[in-house]
Length: 68
Image 1 (tube, rainbow, N blue to C red):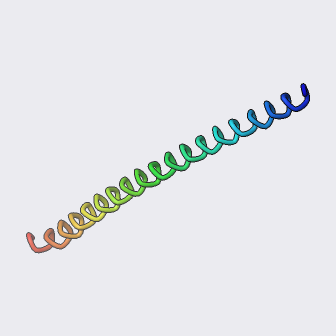
Image 2: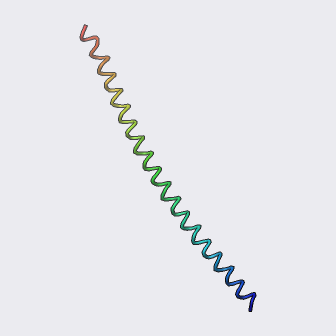
């Protein structure tokens, strides 16, 4: 009887451990998705900013000879 109780306790501990691991995996996946979204937003902002700077540089270059 003692072996049966110990075996059931072991199975219960493994079950709880698996549930905790699953919860941790879901939390890590959610964090990874949030990080990817943040990086994508930053990348879009950087590209937009670089495009604006490049446009200003082109406009300044084309206007400079006309002023002379």
